[in-house]
Amino acid sequence: MDLIPLLADSLNRALESEDSNHKYLESIPFDFNILENLESMSIVEMLLDLEEQIENKTGTHISLADEKIFDASMSPLLRWKQWLAYVDERCQK
Amino acid sequence: MMKNIAQLTFDRPFIRSIVTTVGARKIEFEEESKSLGLTEKEAKRMQKAIGLNTRYVALPGETIVDYCKNSALKLLESLSISPLAIEALILVTQSPNYSAPASSIRLQHLIGMPTSTLAFDMSLGCSGFVYGLANAYSFIQSGLNRVLLCVGDISTSFVDPTNKSLAPLMGDAGSAILIEASPNHNSSYFQFYSDGSGEKALYIPNSGTIKSDKDTAELSNKMIMDGSAVFTFTLKRVPSMIDSILNYSNFKKEDIDYFVLHQPNKYILSNLHKRLDIDSFRVPMKTQSIYGNQNSASIPGTINGFLSKEYTDKKLTNLFAGFGIGLSWASAIVQTSKIYAPNPLVGLD
Image (cartoon, rainbow over all chains, first blue to last red; front, side, top):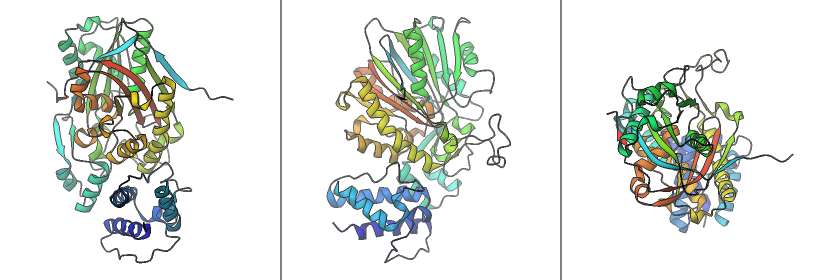
């Protein structure tokens, strides 16, 4: 399963829900910091959205939130590249 | 050095009844979101992530003592037990009538309990039911025959009604739980945890002695929540707490009929449920959506709100887990057998 379009869509939707003037990011920089760019409620919304989409595609529910998700130094949301790797690893498990 | 775990086992006490009174005023989130100035998108986002739908709050001037008294009198009347036959009263609340004296003592008088009653308050929030239950169980184990535990909050008294992220979450409720000595062996298990480094994850500034704290000088005495910190705490602590109480009690996940957890929000409960990997009906999750976050009354509130028939008709093995403000968290495995647990009373009689 190609995760990148799913993750990009969910991020763009979350950014748009905070700012209706948000322009869709076709290409997301590897160092894009999600934690810094979204409010906590939008992050929860993005996680829910993504979990739902992954479940629709794979038939398996994968919990993406854990105790590190909002951690300022260890969150996988600190860099886009890290987020892709984190979700991929969760799906592999 | 080995870390000691605060854990207790009892074989004498059992829960005879649970009664909860919820606020008389029903607030629909759809309406409230408009008055809070939330955009349609913001409201939908909160509804989806948290599960907001309705909540029940107290009428102006009503207190937690009123709510607990209402629940207690209904409980005693239904079981035909005289208030004079109860030896102790514990009130767990963060919204007492006054900072002093303890509101439990006023409650003792209003319920009609004798002056020989042992009565005191415990200041705890979401973990408070489990802590209160353990205290009540300790008294029974040590020789008392009947203890009344009252838990709950009028959270609308300490939450700013214009706080968009906190006000729509909260519900008001007061529960009364009767604990008695059992003639049969009836094992129950408790574990407790505290982490004061998270004091400000969820707190009420300017509500105690500290008034000049730089961080809080500009704030009113209304509750503040760092949502991310509370979220992180919950996902870090609750799953391991559940594993730990199962290990301690030698019960397996499959032995537990219901995992009745504190009800903070839909996303957290759904995440915990997936991690536990058990049937969804065994982890009730609707309380927050219907009644609001009832703080220390959320576990009894969930039993009365959604499991009334099961608790009334069956013998059950239950895992209770409370977690939140403090930071404080605690769990228990308790067996119940056909207890009196009616649907919630709505408003004061």
